[in-house]
Length: 255
Image (tube, rainbow, N blue to C red):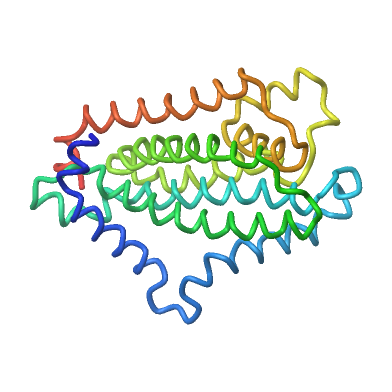
């Protein structure tokens, strides 16, 4: 896969430029929406939930921002990735190129938006009086896991979307369910230890929890936590890669 990416490096670069430009085409604020959109969502969630949960959570704005940051990156990457095959059918049905290039280029666009928002997140942490320590560099680990996980989920969704167009509506419902199960605006401390462990079955919550442990708690997650984060990422990517390999030729007949 890496060899083929290198072979089509120029095409991949052009796809990334196209996807990023298309996202903000004919908008007045352009790239500024990458920063304004998450900030406005954060403001709305803070106004709605701060009185309910804010008094019981230290650095509630950062707590909320960490959850929204990870979840927004996940939904943006997977929603864009889901339509990557169908949206580029006019290209790969005429030219023999790796079909995953389209998904990867969409994910780069989402990653750029995530990176910009992450800078704002660090600015908020400094403003909230949270000191920057060497542990912050460990955030590279969940970011890499999220990239691989999002690619894997995107591969699965884009393959399914070719055969079942209902996936876009089902995925919308599932992401809403994931949002409520990811403890973005509430704390799970009120639940029993068994229930808290069940939250770790949700990969999105796991990555959110990693961010909060490092930034807010100043603690390094356990080895088991690291292994589980990697297992979710590699598992999703393995399933997605298998589906692309198995249905590679069938995509041409269904798009």
